Length: 602
Image: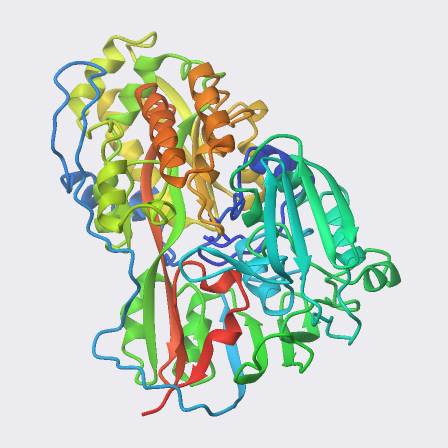
């Protein structure tokens, strides 16, 4: 599986995982994703971070471990003491761009073509078969869901011009009468029902089926109406009916013509969006042409070519030669070189991704709270962000990201609320004291796997290993192919200390917590009070009340030291200076993003 940086997650997370893992890996990793979102766990690929050496002798671990925490407020005074650290965030949620670059107004001109550099390869265009975050970005060019997501993460009409929820488990979607597929055939209720049935089929769509496990029935309830009934209430379900979720509507006739083998170089992909796939060469490129069949306003760009360029130096050379109009996931290690280009700018945005450690408490000695506390006290997350990510990220105080709370709270208030969740302070003396009180006071040896698509995770793990060595714990860090890493997240794999790298595409605050601490979570954490709170979250329709319940659940898991948040991610996107984009946000690339592009004036 190739990927390119971070979805991801997600993807996100969304580290961008360019390829869909096997069904076993999906079940092992995505199985709990409330996931509305993003890698649902859209697990990542490189996402914005340059290649960093992962061998101990090449890794700048001293710089990482010697850097003090950026926001240490309280100090643990006894073994296992939980310090409430009020973290002062340094990242803002608004996108930031290369300094001194002013983007002109929309000239209204048509744009003949653009070239997009994708930091990874795709082997399938159908998200159901390959659901990395990069796949979502590409599918959004040509396929639509019943609903769409705007720049603020709010639901808007898509193929459904309206929808209602007559009771907690029923959703009724009324289709627009002017929607047609790119082959000129109308989008019907039968096509919608068929597409969603295929999406929840584990064989046909292993990358999407999980998100629809709570669906009871999908029925045509009128000539242009579809009704979906759930097994139990889920306040965030509607978001799954977008192309950021699990709804990729296609023609039943097209699917059956190709025997369900869609998204290949021969079958291509059929949707109702403003662009039709005209060519797909796996691991090379995909091409799109604008069509006049779309129900929306005609976009400015006429043709799009997406080149799969996994090597970051090759992407930079292409940009320096003027051959790139948009570059996803500019590596942070090369950001200065990209920013120095005369005809391009780099825009940074918090990307809804989460990176953290978690303990499989079914594996000794991680079933011992004192062991988990010892490791938690050895995590220097602020140093990871300032040194490893060069400030392009934010030390995480929770599993939820601040951006996932912005439907209710301002970015500042969201960060303040998440900072009330208990934090394990970086304190090696407290770590030593906790280990001394544990079931393994003399220390022990363990291993953590890191994906080869995320070298920054390996570097952070090496830094952690250095600190843990001072505590009395030997941590062996092993980089493996992403497929092996994904499989290791299955509790049965027997790894006690693990990374979680998750990309959210929908931005629902319950998405990642439900995956990590809900039923069937990879940590084997079974807290009845937490499960009850998450059940209430599913049924609660008031956004503020849902967030409050999630904070309660996260507080309990933090006190138990099950998940140790490390950082919330940021992504960097390169744009040609004569190419403008309206309302750029973390949600831009999971909807029909080419429609937001325009020719910018001088």
